[in-house]
Image (cartoon, rainbow, N blue to C red; front, side, top):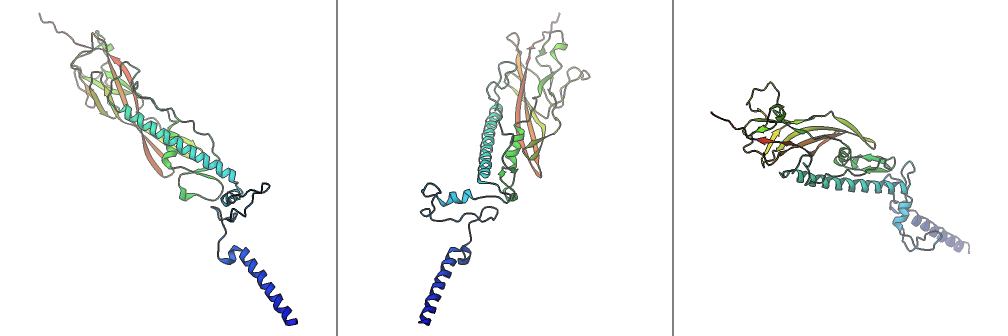
Length: 314
């Protein structure tokens, strides 16, 4: 009788041990579900047995994992969701802005003549910079591999961050400067066949600026790559850089060694030629050790009367 009791007790203890081992995932070699930081999270269970508290309705196991996801400093699921939503919005805003800038550059590159001064970009619609958020619910990083524990993080490429800073950059287009100025002669016009000097008025190399994009610093430096002159008569002159301004020291009739033009037919008496200077910028950006270039095109126009000088021989 005593032996039977001992056997029964041993069987009972053995069954208890088996149940305990089954309840412990580490004893079966199965690792528990963890979050991105290695913290033990809710285990994936059968949704049929996972009942939402207070409702009696099944709850998917994935929701159970998300609700218990916390960073090492106690960041909640809501904070991660807010950071993810902010990241997706920023990515979409930058992508839309890049597409609009591409369309703008393509449109501005076409050699269509404006009809009046000030209408240099009448055929093109310059993009309006997006209304980027001033703050984000997380730390902005530019390399997913550099993600570190410490709370929600927002991951963008360096170029995407640069476009956010670029959208806030203000550049003044170079204005077309034509020398010698028509105002200097008594006819107040440029003459057909006379060499004109073309240059861009303004600052072709403004000082570099620093911008703060959330927790990242971005350096922007704009330089004029080239300058196109749409002369109003259907011809286009392209200059490397901003050109060379005419000065009174230039001998009459000397041609510009850098960028110049001579009209072959007058605009008068029908009106003036609209001369457009199209500035091609290279905006160089630097974020930490990453660098790149964002191209930009701007335009500005002036009116230029061009006539013929008649030589009377007696």
